Image (cartoon, rainbow, N blue to C red; front, side, top):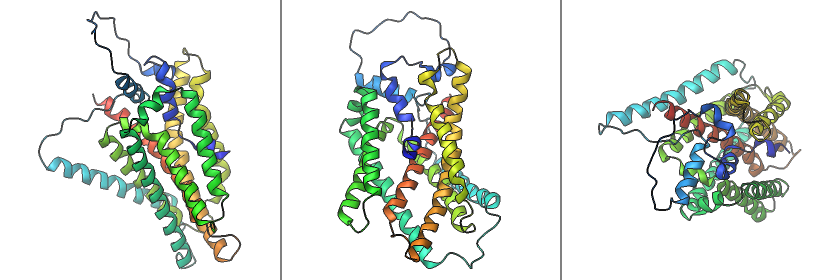
Length: 336
């Protein structure tokens, strides 16, 4: 059942807003009052695709508009150096804060390093499949059809497909190679189908969110890989409780009245920043769990199953990435 709680809720929020006004309950505290103005209405019909795109972008508070850049080449170099400094600083800070006690067994053995590298390779391959499939579905018009359909039907069918393919992958023996990778590919395509409306956002924003997500997960994974054995495995229970609270905060707009603006504001902050912290903790926990499974597989206690290990990291990546997109969208709107 942990999968239900670890799914990103931003896309489902956007789908629920199709049949609602732009100033929905979740974001009413950010809506500025505008006096009515007399405008001339156009006679031509408004594009439904444009409405769907605007509604989805409103789920991330504001439409992201890429600022006009000067033609000077130094601006791009500065931004590249700025991003590299953020990633490097994050790695250094997390290592100094959380990794005061390193391994005392002479470093990571070869079988652990190989197991972890193969898991990272499968995670990157899975994320790549999701990105390529989401782009292909978006260009074929799938995003428009998805957002024009019933939100509850999309959420229900999406959960059934996601959970079905995920558990089918987890409970398939790694010896059954074709079925294992077939179900894993179906799981990734299902995630791509649910996340394809993100392609309505600016490519520059998505690229920055992806870079920051890789930097954050990479720094946390480095801490987990170099820390003492099983140091952070105790985080499983607290993280499960935390993700439950984050999930409930994401469902708050469905049960709270519109007038509870302050409560809705804090529930949204809890979903956004609390979820970022929780899934960062899940990354740390999952890396140490992968190393623990590598030692068990080396002793012959369990079968080596790289695909199952990569699914947990993929879910961490998706949840962190969706929140990064929303944070960057909020920052860009505040600069206007």
